[in-house]
Length: 221
Image (tube, rainbow, N blue to C red; front, top):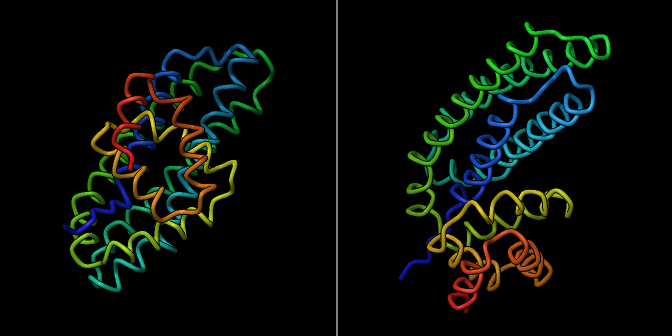
């Protein structure tokens, strides 16, 4: 039976979890409080950095391999990445304006603007991930071998710093169900360096609920 190597669902589940959480936090954050404001804006900027890294990995590592097998299939995703950069620039402009405002100053307009454009960005990005999954998961599995897909995944892992990779795993692993975690852990155990699998275990035991972690270990070969 052909091994199913999914390049999109695990990382997209991580991104969805991150966007849901930050969107909820931003709705209630008091941006007139200096400490709370800095914490919230730092989180948003870190989120944007993670998403920019993910987009670069898709553009430079993931898409070329899929395009080689299915020419032109990633065109729409590339176009959405371009639209994404404009939305990110708009968010960063408002973040900068809030940071530059006088300390302790209440700026209801900027706060409302940030909440609106980040909500708009979340809606855009959720649709973008849906489009990618609908178009690219089946195509990549049908037209690339499991070995080719694993090679792409390993290139992404090697292009990510250890600290950043750990951060991604903290979002990713608790966002996945057992039917997704078990094959992912088995694929990493069988194909990735031991250090990568140990990192999965280290993050997994601290982020996955104990009962699910126990059941997962029963399913990992």
